[in-house]
Image 1 (cartoon, rainbow, N blue to C red):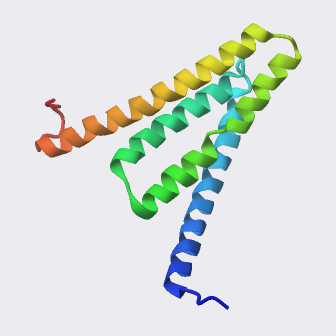
Image 2: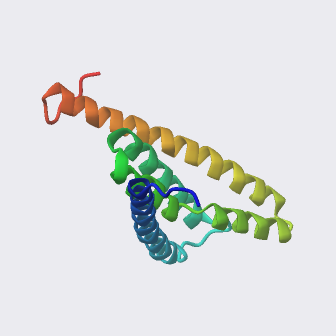
Length: 143
């Protein structure tokens, strides 16, 4: 029987709990936000797009500012639970089944490009925030 490293086991279980709680909060937030966005009149799944872009922005933003357990909670947990590849895939699949190929292609393109831009924007925004803090000035940013 292999030796069990109790401190490592506690660390792994603690991380799992932190990610799980963050994921539950993120998924709950996505559920509420998704319900609010269902009222938008559109032929494309805009709610999924907005949620994914906001989530990737937050992930990029937090990746610059936090680490350790806070990173596990916010990035892996919350942002992972908030963003939704499954809904994006399902929405695109429905468009294909409806033979709306142009809409499906556009949905894929806008989601992928939007999420990459969102991640970059979050990363850059956090960098600006850090440069403000490091400059010692509350308002003026100095590149």
